[in-house]
Length: 123
Image (spheres, rainbow, N blue to C red):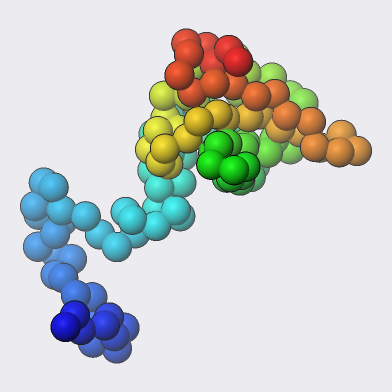
């Protein structure tokens, strides 16, 4: 029988030991928040500044997973469009994604969809 995790007892592993181990993982590495942090930190400072005001959403439509980047304005969307190959390569950190989209709200959500399997994201 497996003993359930009790938060008052602490983590079921030693975080210091796990950090020293090159293949060690923390609890945050397995959460979506941790994966999004690694996705965001995988870019250089100029692209991180562009992504700073964006929101992220994962949409599952009958098994087709789409990672949506919700841009605050058209300027941010255009900058991300120019760097779409860099964005595509880093999205794999989040998980198994089929498509990604750069979206903006103009009286309704308008998204530009890109395929994860093709260079420059063409659909």
